[in-house]
Length: 416
Image (cartoon, rainbow, N blue to C red; front, side, top):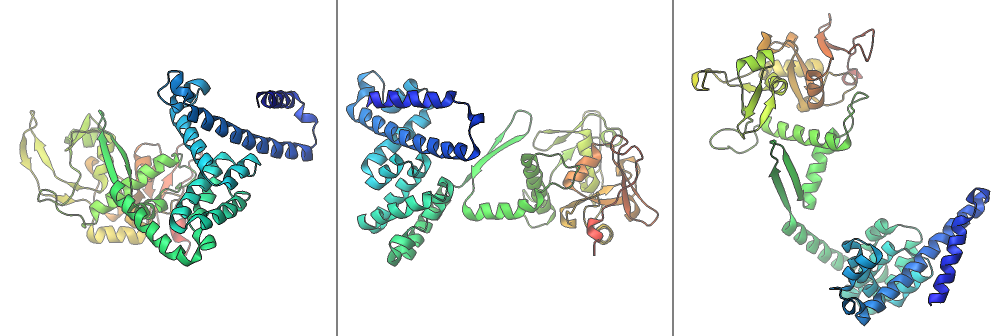
């Protein structure tokens, strides 16, 4: 065996040194196919060797705790990859001969073998050895057309082809087991970072995953050519928009006797002159710019604080833009008014063109609808917004974007 492998290694080395540029396109494609087949055949040989070494106890004889650890050091593999290699070698050794033969013939790759072996084991448990043997042939044929991911999806319905009389019942049982695992494994972990941010990790069950996707997918598309956010940033902002909508929808349970709310403590100077910061009731801090943005479309609790922060006088709770005024704003703007944005009204804040803290009025001619992204963008960029002579908002781009600073409008909501 070692002589044959050394000869193969020398032949492969000679191929590596060959001038690929001088080969015709047809021969290049043929060489690629041959290389892939050779790679799979070598994988079959490698698994055979791993299985034999594992069976002989070579790893423990040489001082390693197990074969996977020995392979990690010997072949410089990650321990996870080494364990998968040992497990696949064992599966291939005890599984149907057809799977091993397909790999040795270069008809399937290692990942496809893993899927086939797992699927065949499931079929064997559900329908017996005869159906499992039939499944091998079907799956190997499919492997010639589909990669491992697609093969796994197709494998969920393999019983339709090899044991149709029990397919429906087996599928129902598998779904129940899957739902049970999903119910057991579902969780969300919220880890607070030192700077007040949160790290979210977890696993959603199928229903919750569908609800999340339905809620945020429409909001994760770029809002226009000015949207430079990464996909991850867009998903973050979409989740924030969904939470914001839930908080304003009056559909959440009470929290300590109050409706759910975001509480920010600041001073009048912060709102008026962009000084210092605001403090959340959770202890986190917000910049003055962010506090001013939140104040655009929020319930304000006016309070006069003394030098030591004690409350000297608290005013009446009042929402800045709501009711008939909000409805009139929706009728006028029909959604986010920023050029090129298609966000509907329910995802929008009411932004004061002339900020309320600077003396701006709460009126239709001093308001504009903006989605969360463009609300933040307007507060932290050189864009400006104003009402034109016809009473509709127009946005003036910064000089670096358009030296002429020609006002732009949103035409999306007015196509009809």
